Amino acid sequence: MALRSASLRRAVTGFAFKALSAPLEKACRLLVVFVVAPALGATAFGTYQFATTVALMLTALAGFGLGPWTTRALARDRDGLHAVMAAGLRLRAFAAIPFLALLGLVAWREDAGDARWAMIVLGVAALAHSFVDYYGAILRGREDFRQEAAMNAVRALSTTLCALGAFFVTRSLMGLATGIAVGSLASAVWGLWYVPHVYRDARHGSTVSQTDAVRVVRDVLREAGPLWLSGLLATLYFRTDILFVRYFAGEAEVGSYAAAYRIFEATMLLPSTVMHVAFPRLARAHTEQHPARQVELPLTLLLVALGVIVAVLLVAADAGVVRALLGPAFARSEAPLRVLACTVPVMFASYAVGDFVIARGREAWLVRVLGAMLALNVVLNLLMVPRMGGTGAAWSTLVTEVAFVACGIALLARGLNRGKTTREGAS
Image 1: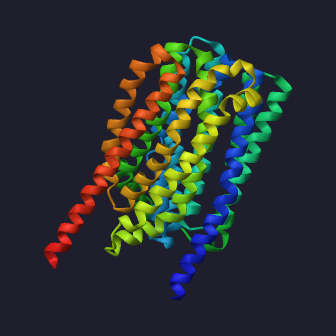
Image 2 (image 1 turned 120 degrees about the vertical axis):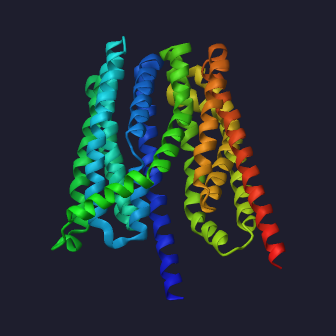
Image 3 (image 1 turned 60 degrees about the vertical axis):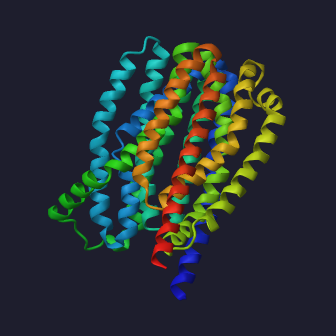
């Protein structure tokens, strides 16, 4: 009973800190968009979004699945902190080498000077963010949610203040990119000090042997592959539309579509928070042989209902939101925002389905289905973006999310029927 109460307290505490830090991070990102986009205009803002997207894709490519592997490893073995941290930070630093090489190659192929230099500077910022994300993975593995929230808050505030400060001084894309990079590097340096400081008492007298370091690296290379691949596919799946819009419709259309997508993306805070709280219960329902649908169906209905409410509000306010926050230069954001608003209930259900599959231990399915969804999304973008621009990319997102949810429901239903047959045979 005491163990269960302690577990409940940790879950409630973790949710409380998540509920405080996650909205702050989202608010900071939206503040940058709403301040910078009208001043830059659709074309320059599109250049900024394209450079950011490329940097994020390259970061995912060089991620090696270190973050989720570290969280899982530390959750299973709290005594392995120093070996995991030492090996993980070394691998993270090693991954920076191919990342910077790829970044330089992609930037060199850019014709426009602004896009080239913005991509390089924002790539450095993304690399710094990847280190902060890794520190967060360490803290989550130790269930130190308060420290994780503090670190993420420092990152959000430092990046936002530096970005807006540099932009107000220069009123340029390069000023914005430089401010983001300075804030990101500052938060990475602070995290490099902060995480060892949190565990300074446990660090005294502890050493990591060469054998332990080699063992951890071997475990990472063996176990993190599927996690890395699924994360990479998810990043490509959600970000590739920006590349198609830029190629077929130009920078201004990228700016308009990205502004609508940022507003749409902000609504995802709601399902992610709900599933963060519900996931432990989902895992217990599966391992204890309880009918999973007793938990999954109410959660799905709740999220879809919330998604419908959010979608109605977005559709009703889309023109007012775009014009009030971004100005008339972003009038073309209204059409894709309406389509993305219709995607909200489906995306809320998508969050639920993804966590249901993971709770049942079917992570390998995610790799296959995300690969299929990426292929579908590419085909849809090739068909729709040349004719419809950003609105076509929004429709591609909607259709792909419907397909993902349908595949997930089919898999979950097959699992339920298989479990029912097994129980009937046993009785």
